[in-house]
Every structure is written in structure tokens, then in C-alpha cells.
Amino acid sequence: MSGPSGPVPSPGPQPPAVPPSVPPGGWPAAAPSPQPAPTDAPPPARRRRPAVAVLAVLLVLTLVGAGVLGTYLWRTSDSWRDAAADWEALAREHGAQVAQTQADLEATSSELEATRGQLATAQTRITELADEKAQLGDTTAAQQQLADYQTRVSRAAGDVATALTNCIDGQKRLIEYLGDTSRYDADDLARFRADVERVCGAATDANAALQRELAR
Image 1 (cartoon, helix red, strand yellow):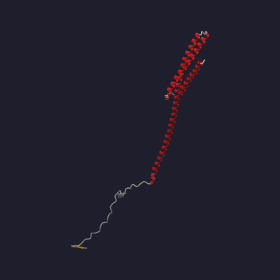
Image 2 (image 1 turned 180 degrees about the horizontal axis):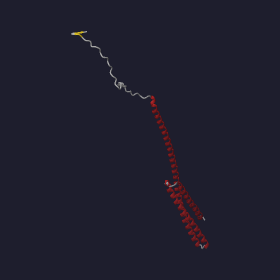
Image 3 (image 1 turned 90 degrees about the vertical axis):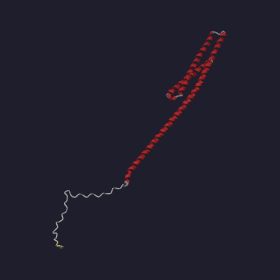
Image 4 (image 1 turned 90 degrees about the horizontal axis):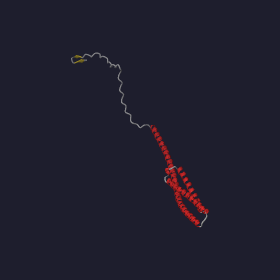
């Protein structure tokens, strides 16, 4: 090949290409390509089963609890109704007892007044008989009989008056107790009522004895 001023020298042989040297630690690994972020996918249907089971258990427990509570309330309501019925029956019984005792008290008071009147009449009659026998000159034996009769009548009348007074006092107290039964034991009230009936029965017997004496 020739140039403008003569032949151009050839460049001569080229040195061979040397590959780049490998670093001692080796070539660095290539960075992984970024992966796309996972999208929020709905959980599989099988994962909902535990929640459904829990809800079912809670529902069953709620129903069971409601049933137990309903049964308790029903039994409690029955108990209250029974207690109310018992109290109502007891109140009616005590009311009837009060009414009967008040009637007995009125009858006993009338009987006591009648007995006092009979005693006054008997004493007046005894005094009149004593005067008549004295005016007729009766013997001492007749006078003694009249005195004995007066003694028997007075004693019988005194027994009647005492028994009737005790009966009236007991009836008044019984009416007071029956008016507030919550303060007293039922057995104690029953015993006291029996005592009052016994005392009033004794008064009736004493009055019967007085009537027999007055009838002689």
C-alpha cells in the first residue's frame, strides 16, 4: 500500500486480546430481579370453618343459658305464688279467728253483766226472805239455812265474776295478738288461744253452777 509520500508501512502483528482477570472472590452474583408484591387474595373457604364453629357453640350456650334462666324464673315465680297463697290463707284464718274472738268477747261481756245483775237480784231476794222469816218468828235453823244459801250464792257469783273477768281479759289479749301475728310464733298463739278457751270454759261452768244455786 502506498501513501502520498511513498509506501505506508504495515502495522505489524497485533498482540492477542487478554480477557479480564477474575477477581479472587469471583464475580459478584447478579441481583435478583424484583418480584411483584403479592396481592391480598381472600382466604380460602376452609379457613372460615373455625369461626363458624365458635359462633355455633356460642349460640348453643346462649340458648342453654336462656333455658336455664327461664326455668329458674318459672320455678321462682311458682314459689312466690305458693308463698303468697299461703300468706293469704293464713291471713283469712287469722281474720276469722279475730272475728270469732270478738264475738266471744261481746258474748262474755254480756254474760258478766247478766251475772252481776243476777247476783244483785239474788242478794236482794235473800235479804227480803231473811226479813220475812224474822218477822214470822222462824226458828234459828231456818235462819241458818237462809244464811247458808246466801253464802253459796255469793261464793258461786264471785267465782263466776272472776272467771268471766279472766275470760274477757284473755279474749282482749288474743285479739291484740291476732292483729299482729308477724310478731309472735304461730305455736305460741295456738297455745294462748287454747288457754283462753279453757279459762272461758271454766267461766261457763261456774255460771252454770250459779244458775243452779239461784234456781233452788
